[in-house]
Length: 379
Image 1: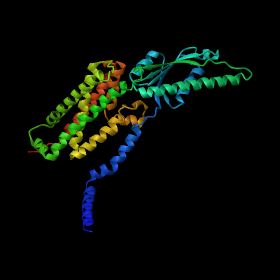
Image 2: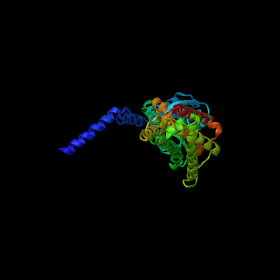
Image 3: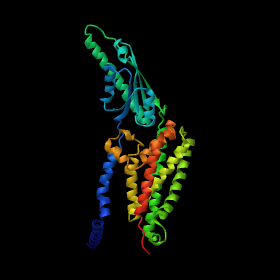
Image 4: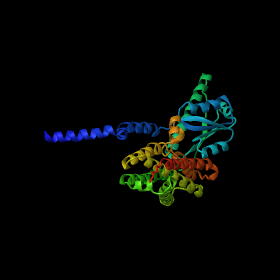
C-alpha cells in the first residue's frame, strides 16, 4: 500500500499545482477547444463559393439564366459584374475573383436558332487542385444548362424533334496552365517557413533569458526598451530573411518554379513580413512567463491562425465573413497572395502597393506592442 500512498501524494501535489496555476488550466482545458474551433473553420477542402466575375454582353433573359445556373449551384459566388474582359483580367490578377465568365452579344439569338452559342470561362490556377475541381464544376453546369434548354424546347414543340447543338464554351486556365501543384505549393511553403521559424527562435531566446534570470540584468541596465527590442529583433529578422533568399533560390533552381514578377517587390515584402512575424514572437515571449508557455502560445497562434487562415491550401476568398476576419489577425494571407502573385502572375509594385502598406502596418504594430510590453526595473 505504501507505493500507492506515494503515488496519491504526488498526484495531489500535481493537482494542487494545476488548480493553482490558471495559465496551465487554460492550456489544458480551454486552448484545445479554441484550437479545434479555429482549425475546424479554417481548414477546409470544399470548393464552394468561388468568387465569380461576369461579363454579360447579351443582357438577355437566356444569358441571365445561364449566369444564374452558376450561382445557384453554390460552387460559385457572383461578386463582380463588368463590361469588358480586361476588367475581369485585372480582378483575377488582384485575386478578387477566381473564375471569370464572358457571354458575348447575340447569345440568346444563336441559341434560339438551335446553333451552338459561344461563351468563355477563365479559371485562376494559382490553386491548381481547386482549379481542376472548378473546371469540372463549370463543365457540369454547362452540360446541365444545355440539357435543361433541350427539355424546354421539347415542351414547346411536343410534336417535333428539337435540335440543339449545345454550348460552345472555351475554358482557359490562367497563371498555371499546366496545373502543376508544385507551382502553387512551393511559393506557399516559402511563406509557411517564414511564418514558423522567425517567431519561434526569438521566442526561445527571450524565454530562456527569463528562466535563467539574465533578463533581470537587462531590465536594470541602462538600455532603453526600444533598444532592447531592436537589438533582439534585428539578428533574428536578418536570419529569417537570409533563409528566405535560400528558399527562393531552391524554389527556382531545384523545383523549377517560374518566378515571373518583380524580384525587388518579393524581397522588400519578405523583409517587412519577417520583421512583423519576429515582432510577434518577441511580443508573445515578453508577455509569457516561461519558455514552455511562450512556445505553446507562439505555436498555437502561428499554426491555428497563420497556417490555416493563410490561404496556403484554401483561398481566403472562399471563407465566410468570420473566417476572413480571423485571417486579418496576422499578415500571412496578404503575404501569401503577394508571393503567389509575383511567382505565378508576374505582378509588380503597381499591383501590390496596398499590400506592402498593410504588411508595414502589421510590422509597426507588433514591434510597438513589444516595446510597450517590455518592462524596465529601476536600479
